Image (cartoon, rainbow, N blue to C red; front, side, top):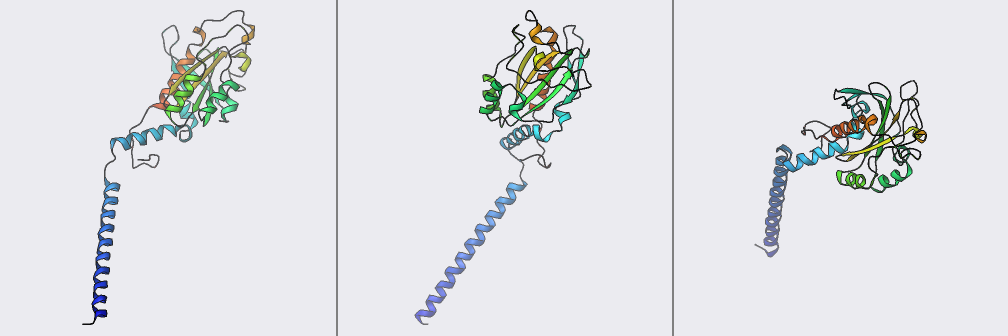
Length: 248
């Protein structure tokens, strides 16, 4: 046998060995991929999927689900009543929904949108505009929440400011509610959402006309409505990885 022939056989053996290695590696990769695709998700993966689903709700949920037509609250009398939605604001821009001071704070922490809707109490004497401020994650929402002004009633000097902008809807009990009529504000948080409210009287009475600060009782429904909406948005659902809205 010539040296050339021997070298040719050696190269064939080497090529065969390399091909076998490729086949084995490919088989291992395919087996690993099949195992990954067909195994049950881990707890960490389920939690991640749940957090992603919550963070997308401001986009994925219908507006009527974020802001239910009616929200239960409990006045001082102790008997449950219902606040009724009068309208939902189509604009979701962050800066247009709040006073400038609040816009600066939420913008610094990555505000993605502000969704607003207005409710009236069961007697249609008190109006509440609710604003859902969406952030990328709970940590950014928490930082903004801690920097924003807290709950406050009228200051006797022209109303409540800075606050969420009032949203009036013509032809409803909230038709006269504007920024000058804001008499109360509250703040709450749920997951990646900060929920603001601003309240006033349905007759549009300017807060500047008040001679002294009013107690918070007339607007007690505001924090309850805000809390109910925040709790609904932040409640985690059990992931169903077979459904398209989940990313497991």
